Length: 612
Image (tube, rainbow, N blue to C red; front, top):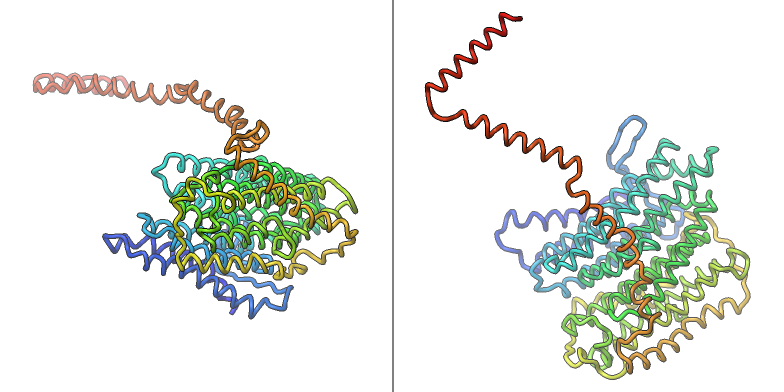
């Protein structure tokens, strides 16, 4: 039964290979039903296998660990790495999210992307992404994890720029690829440092060596900060968060799968998996918490000012992952993964519901052109409302249980009032504001210009995933994973009732503020105050990077267009061309000239022989 887990990443890979190979055997694009059967079916079977193994092997056994050894991958000096998998409850939670939520998004895509000219290519990319993400979370060593890490980066580039004929989409894909490469480079250096220090990159052996040996604390701090750099890039945290809002250029189901439920949570998984190393460095733990606290606040305020429905959700994703980083930084490892799970449910629901809104409004995404849609698309309205309630962490929703865990852990971090807890509380208020603001702007009030042309675009194949995700979003808080064996026993939380009361009150206050903001914006339209314009621009990070990095680099490239190296190459080419021209002139077709040249050459050759 355990051996079935090896098929979980293999099935999406087979689906990808089959979809790519189809043009080799058929001159025309295959029917959408065949592509759907291959693309959706491969992930669906992987999800079924994961569920079976979870129920038969892991259920009721929090300490269960499964090792799957496939083959020897690398053997270079003392670097010995296998293509092997390590599955514990942390991995299992990620597997269920990737395959389960991934299957629902694949199924929704079959309806959303119907009649697209690149239907087959779309599902091929999705399947390859799922395979790479599964390898990332199942890997038993950091090099194999890095293979999956780079794989999801490649697939993200391909899917963000899927509609490549629009230059803006290509630019967004390049931006995501380049910005995340910064973090990936830091992570690679961290891997080199860890191997240099411990002579292994096998995760269990590395953790054991770090905990048992008298290693220099500064080495651990530097290594964990470098890994944090990789996590910051992949999870779109400060200061590398600028790529994610532009990544909304891809199809909406792509945003749900890659940029809400799976890829952007890879950084959270990395830090959680390497948590024994982070526990050895207070500096690294504090850095993780600070990054999370700043990111959740800055991106939360940016979400309040957005007018594009997908960009609101994009900044929301950055903010919620900030909550996960905050939890990791204060040692609430289980809380971070719990919120990762519930966030996958309600954020996938929100993105897919937004996709239904966009299709129903003929691809309109400006929330100021919407309004009054609860009458025309009631099912989508219900789903979006559930998603917003969970995102804002209203009581008894899944988001409430996981976020409450994080806030109480932040309170206990310094045994009372502290800046991390305060950041989480303010973030809860801000989340309530932007969650209900977008809900009111899209579905409440009078109809906007786009709402007049609304026609419900939901089909049965789109309705089923939305229904399942809505149920998971509401009741997923009851499915807290048993991660005690992975992270150790969490200490009991002692706090006054008013502490939890504040956490419950914040989203309700946010709802009230959102209603007042909605009424004001409905009257004034898209006119923004200076502070709102600043938040709308993402706190000016794109402007800063453009003027601080991009423009000087481009200017230097233009100045250095004809540099010394280029001149050497061009000079060599010019000399060769000139020499060729001289030698070519000797080929004049006159036999007498050839004989004289031959004789002169022979005499010269003989003279050289005599001289020597």
